[in-house]
Length: 150
Image (cartoon, rainbow, N blue to C red; front, side, top):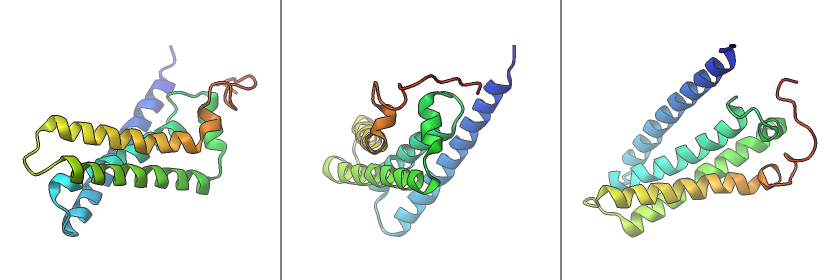
């Protein structure tokens, strides 16, 4: 049994987790220093970071190794960077707006979880919508034969 692909996938996920953690800490710190309350800064940072990281995972981790992964990797880097940025921005705005509308400094954990979940769904959903032809059933990913070993 060849464990190299599994090791590559685990390494890619670990690297992505480190990038996500560092990005979250940096963004949350920047928001806090800008005067954004912590109960608003955390969902904003999570919405931004997780949305972008999920999009990057689709394009760059070897877990799926499907036609979708190949099509995303074939896009110009600048185009993918814009897609990641838009996903992060939508996730951040949704996290911030949800925090302002639904949360306070004393809000329970379930409400925070709901705000973060909606922010991530909206942010990552934006990435999927911007690449709809890749994700659509019967779209570009479904057309033709795909050999993951090629």
